[in-house]
Amino acid sequence: MDYRKMAADILPLVGGKENITSLVHCATRLRMQLKDGEKFQTEDLKKVKGVMGALFTGGQYQIIVGTDVNHVYDELLAVTGLAGGTVDKVEQDDLNKNQGGKMERIMDLLSSLFTPAIAAITGAAMIKVVLVILTLLGLLDSGSQTYQMFSMVGDAPFYFLPVILAYTSSKRFGVDPMVGLTIGLCMVHPTYTAFVGAGEPVTLFGFLPVPLATYTSTVIPVVLVIYVASWVQKLAEKLSPKVIRFFFKPLLTLLIMTPLVFCIIGPLGNLIGKGLESILSVVQNNAPWFLPIFFGAFGPIVIMLGMHYAVTIPLALAAIAAFGYDMLGPGFLVANVAQGAAALAVAFLAKNKDAKSLGMSTGISAILGTSEPALYGVNLKYKKPLYASVIGGCAAGIVCGAAGVKRIVFGPTGLTSIAIFIDPNNSMNFVFAVAGVLVAFVVTFALTCLLVKKDKNVMKEIGN
Image (tube, rainbow, N blue to C red; front, side, top):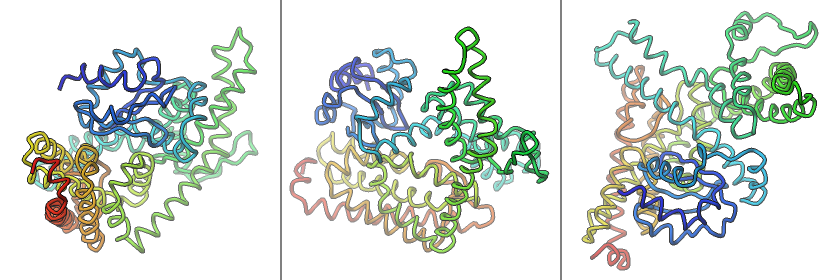
């Protein structure tokens, strides 16, 4: 693929570099915000070689490229001159007033907080998976220093998640990133965690009680804290004399934020997080079958709505932090396999070389864990494969749900990372996860062949 040409073809179809105010990317999509959304030529973008789809969702204009998205992103950055693909806070607020409804802006906000953290989180998660495999095979002793060192690396992004989110939240809310990081670090500082461990009353100024909430591995408290810090920083800006603003503004911000973090905002966020954990606990304990079935069937819809980063990642991380597992992962595992099976069925039936090649490449990608190219490039285009994948994913979700399959370590869901379903305390967890994969593939592949063969228009499109 000629990524430079692809970027050059995309640029005029989004209004040129002058029209782009923000450009980022996730695992498969270019995500941008534009001054004039009318210049986003959806249908023409879909015709660009290498583009799987184009849409507006989650408050962003998105172009689905696939796993090569980072190369196209780099070429676009080189052409547009955007530094890191970011836009300043004031301009961002002005743009949000005119782009999408309230729910879309919320999805955009949540995505912007978690998308930059995905690489660190998934990389560390896979290290934990490798350690589990090596331990089960007897190749590594769990008591060895080597194991402990790598386990530390695997745990770090999860333990210090408030620090990572403090940075991404600071970038999103317009807080000085170093000040935001400092606030996040304070929430997991050894002195504070020692206070929590001791369990003895702590006060500020001798009279202001500090609720001893635990913030390690949490999500909601730090996001709320940094949002409040964005307003405190504005106040500090106004109150700081220009001559000493360089040091007085961060000083005043931290002085005001310290009691707010530990006495009000942090504990409030902790209570909200505990409420979310309670809801997840009710679902996972009383209806463990629901989440695998729901996400097995409607995983593609969740992806199309742009909620797979904004909603499912916070829920999964919260569940794993609270219970040591989550029930969303099995649903997305079988949903991805179903998407891949549908695309491969199209490739199997196709006589047109381009359709066969696209179905084969995107189908394999989906089974390995990245389903968006198959979803947008094949299944949604022909519709019948998408219907089949929903039914196949639902059938496999029933298998996983009935068996109570759990994702033990957070990570991408596909054959390349299926080891995240290995439970050292329950060997059948992995067995039933594999069973779900087989059901998803067989049911979806057979049903896609049946539905597509009956659709003369689709058969004609794929060269039959």
